[in-house]
Image (tube, rainbow over all chains, first blue to last red; front, side):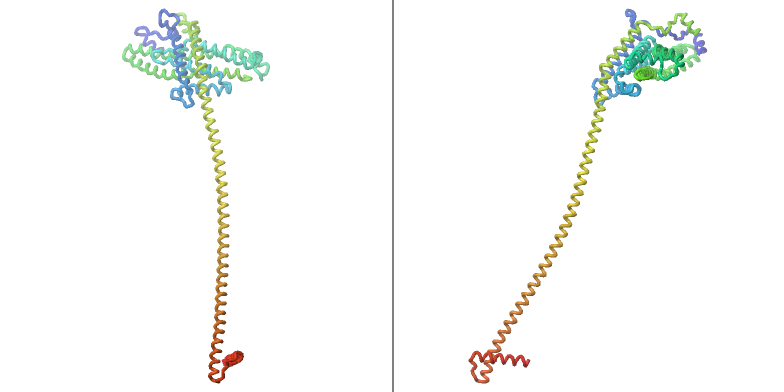
Length: 262
Length: 177
């Protein structure tokens, strides 16, 4: 990689993509706050909202193809993340989990949609928002289900553990519940999208730069593009997986709050 | 780490730092979508699921009822069939018995008739024979008397004597036979 960059750097200066490329200018100069990720987070919300509202509108027993398409996604979240993890109480968490999954998935896939090509969650603010919401939800569920006293006591002193272990376990548990869980949720999503986008940028921008060089470098440039295309497919996998993992972990944390002992 | 610090020094922004506008925008977008999902999408999908479940369970229940009904009908049919077979065999048995009785009766009647006809014939023959004997006797008597009177020349007009003579003649006739 280093050699490749050095080679290309011999011509006009190749600037490798960096975190600078994630700070996008406003789309319209007059509206300072409206950047690409902000616009497309709303676009995602509107698209997803419209699609599933239209799909679910009739709620027919024998679904149309359109309703079936919506139900396929809903049924996946309902079964794999709802009933199997949250059990009989899954119904009241379905709006949250389904929003989470579809919103993250759509925004992630924006990363490889031509002309959009920017995953919203490569901006960490969006990932923080979802992490904070998840934090609020699973603590609220736990507090409501078990009562303030028992919930805090169970976190501080996990039942069924020998007393000396608390010296180690209590700080770990407190850190887990207050910091690690929401932060890892956010960071996992953000880092995957950030790294994926950076990787694609390197291969495509690098390839573009190499194509302007000598014949041998053009060959490498074509290879770089090929690699970029292969990585695009890989990114699609990562994007789906990250949406699933975020929702899955949120569901698991909620299930932990619902259980009598965690 | 060094490179990162260098990059940061070169003016590359820290990607872990949140931006206020994005936090607000992300929250609003997520909340909007959540409200749509909660008010429209999830209830409608759940409704479809519930109705589908009800329809399937209803169908199963209906099928079970139909199956039970069919089973009852089959049992009834089988029972009726068995009864009918019983009745048929009873009827057949009765018919056979009745037939045998009729044949027996007919035979008895025929025998009786035959006996009666035979007896009547016997009686008739006997009566004709007796009549013939009487008639013969009278004729033979008359002939004999006539013959005798002719021979003897003596009028045998006396009735008593006549019959006495005939009897004697007949006795002789029978003895000589």
